[in-house]
Image (cartoon, rainbow, N blue to C red; front, side, top):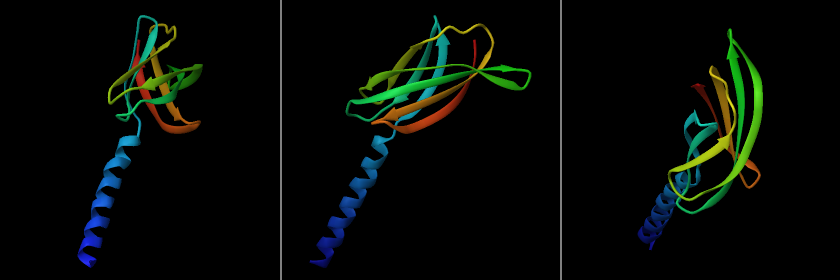
Length: 116
């Protein structure tokens, strides 16, 4: 009976650890084109509703200044999702802060540099 118990606990632990990584949302590439910021987000296999907030900073002579904060909601339906957020950016260098929230709590945050 002890051997079966250890095997059962081991199987449960492996399944738990495998499933733990599936719930994390990850932000991929962030790009700009045609008046839209495009944010790649990797989600779980099951559909999940998230909030995507971006804060855009201009970069000028080693300083950054907040330009705008905007966001949207999205339903992630699998491993590769694209979230589009309309913004107007002039040519230049920008620092983009991306925040993903789920159920009202911050799930992940990243910073990306882009050039328009």
